[in-house]
Length: 178
Ligand SMILES: Cc1cc2nc3c(=O)[nH]c(=O)nc-3n(C[C@H](O)[C@H](O)[C@H](O)COP(=O)(O)O)c2cc1C
Figure 1 (cartoon, rainbow, N blue to C red):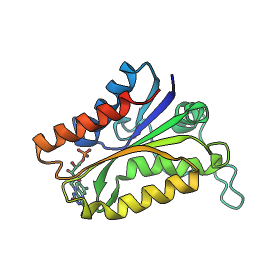
Figure 2: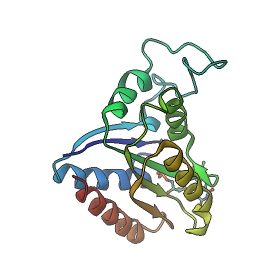
Figure 3: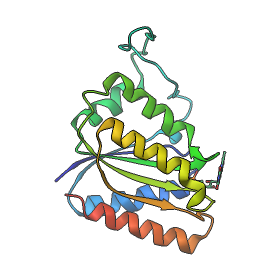
Figure 4: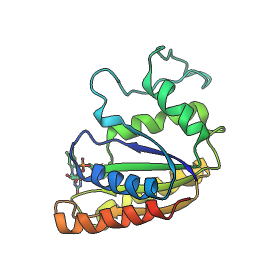
């Protein structure tokens, strides 16, 4: 049994990266894993996602007491075995809501090292259009020391048949995790 944290970013509901994350989560639950999921794009106005750092020297700003990433997400990440990043491709990068949660890792870079990771990305373009995201994710995984357990890059996400195949891959990936 692995402790898995799933982080999604898209404000699109139902959306294509959500479809991948839902399928992964289903497989991972069926395999008996413990899941915590945070949908950064679906938190509403109550959860502003912008960069706030307390411990980084020279960059201190206050974190409000009710901050959801600090209070809900970071404690689960600190205990996690596997981190799943589920992004939609917006302007050839990952969507901003997920990125603002990733930016909050900065206070915890050291404590968060040595987990495993899974990447799920959807976008209307081709695999080649996703090149910048693939490089970004590889650099992030290396920097965080989070070896990859697998990734699904769902290109042509407007194509529902193709998206269903990618969702099946995400489901099977979730099933393989123990
Ligand atoms: C703000 C915005 C920017 C986008 N930028 C790109 C892009 O650069 N390349 C691309 O192929 N598709 C782009 N798309 C299309 C999305 O990748 C596509 O709709 C994807 O399925 C959205 O995922 P989601 O449903 O999880 O939000 C963009 C869509 C939006 C809303």
